[in-house]
Length: 208
Picture 1 (cartoon, one colour):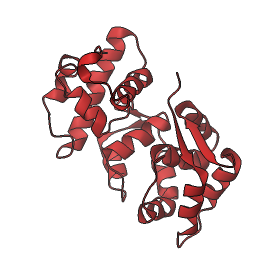
Picture 2 (cartoon, rainbow, N blue to C red):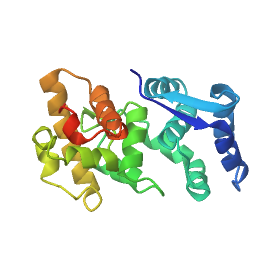
Picture 3 (cartoon, rainbow, N blue to C red):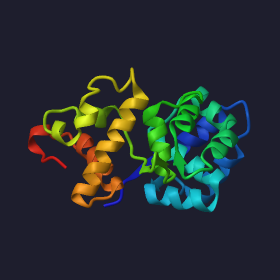
């Protein structure tokens, strides 16, 4: 299975048309990588694009991260700050300082940052970046997953008030699981994302 997103091409073209500034890298990406109706992106495809062309790869990461859409003002800021983001991502491993710098960019929260870091194949403190959003937080704080995420559960309910500490704890727990079960970090966070999106009750699923 490959985790992928699908969004409407016309949604993105209409958003770009409403911007006050030009977005040549976004327009170029849609011309090259979207069909007549849809933009379909796989995580590994985004990583390949980023490796080949950081600017277009960053656009791919933004579109992959915001497949359901984005506010015009938020997109405008990302278009404006694209060179800054490309420069900031010009490293394999993020530290507290560089992640805080990323989180200091307008409109970028931990969920958004975690998706962008994962899409571009980056590490945080030597651990492969993994996706963490509100749905995944709810899953790992559930009774079924509590034993799998001991560090994270010490910060229960603090995903928003202490986002960096929470993300670091999550990655450390995920890394332990990856080593213990010999499973890639990508497969683990994809499992959690699919788990939260299947509409099944937590009691009907087994822990990672």
